[in-house]
Each structure stands twice: as C-alpha cells, then as structure tokens.
Length: 278
Image (cartoon, rainbow, N blue to C red; front, side):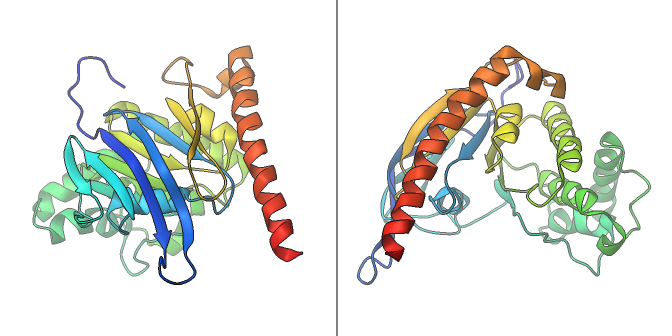
C-alpha cells in the first residue's frame, strides 16, 4: 500500500456461507467465512483444490449469490441473501483461461471496455493504453493479434485490459497457471510494477505458495470444503519485492508457516476423497 494515497476498494466479508443446490444434493462450499481486505492491499487466497476459493471470488465479483452473510465494498453492501449488485467495472476479474478476443488487436482488446461503456473516447482510451503498454515495455505490440503473442504476453495484455477500467478491485483467479517457472518470475515482476505504479486492491487466487508469499501483503489460508478461514498470515517483507527476497530467512520461515497450514488441509481433502471412493 502507498503512504498518503486515498485508495478505494476495502472489502469486508462477514459470515459468508454458500450451499449449492440446498434442496437437492446440498453441496456446502463455504461456511461462515469472515475476513477483511484493506483498500489497496494485495491479498492472496490459498487452499486445497476445490475448497471454495473461486466460489468466494465469484461472490465478491457478483457472479454468484450467497446463502448467508454479507459482503461490503467500501462500506456499501454488495451481496447478501436478499441483495446483490451485478458485476461492473468496480470489480474486474482476470480468469485463469485466456479471454482475449482473437479477432481484435492488442490495442482493440485493451480499449474495448471503456469505449463500449462510453467512459472514454476512442482517442483517450488509445492514449491511455499506449501509456500502459509503454510502462511495462510492451509498446510496439499494439497491432498484434493474440495468436502472435506468447502466453505470458497474452496474460499481461489481459491484466492491462482489466486495469484500464480503473476498478476498485482487481480479482485474479490463478492467472499464471500453466506458465513455466521462468515466465512466472517475469509475470510477478510485471504485476508488482503495475501495482506500485497504480495501487489498488488485489484479490489473487493461487496454488503456488511461492507466488502467494512473494506477491501478497497477506495470505489467507482456506480449509478443505466447506471452506472456512483457517489462518491469515501477514507477509512482513520489504516492498516492492525482488526475487532475491526468496532466499531470506524470513521468507523461508513464512513459507514454512503457510505450507504447514495448507498441507494439513490438503491431507484432509485427500483423506476425504479416499473415503468417498471406498
């Protein structure tokens, strides 16, 4: 977070539960989840596969309703059992599967949202896009199509497409999944650079514990399904970060703390799966 800046995007999740098909198979995805994300904070959510991380993201984004509890954005109720604000540019989502329009250029992809929504003229949107592309050394790619770009560059363009809308919250659901280790380090530095240049609230889901600790101000660890908050780890490492911090004793201690908590839940999930198959 940047000192002295008034940044919107505070999220408050209060006693949130989610049951799919309550009158049928009754799948309990989340149970009584409560935690806060400060405005301008980079929060990372980790936990076993299928534990409910994406369910929580969808609830905050407005894609899905909740069975109990409330979700607030900057003090405004955005979701409850009786009320839900639909998705809008205040909460932009970058999914793990690519979503660029293949028939549009990089420039057209980035500027599509603000132009269609009438929030920017074509000229202003293109000027803003060029500024953003230059910031992350992607200038010169404006007229390229997605198929001409590497997967890593495509992911960067998708993130720029979300950020040009100047949302209060950016939600990323395993955006770097499938990239190799070297590409991931580049993406981490890219995201860190964007965050420092234009701080905003980040809600980031991952299975990669190194990624979680390197990027996050805090790491929220969820239990196996039904998801509850098992532990919240504050990442008290210098900011902005360089990958050399991963060799520090404090980083190693933090990773051990997160790993122990996640491993315990992953073991429970595995054992539950074994019982279901028996």
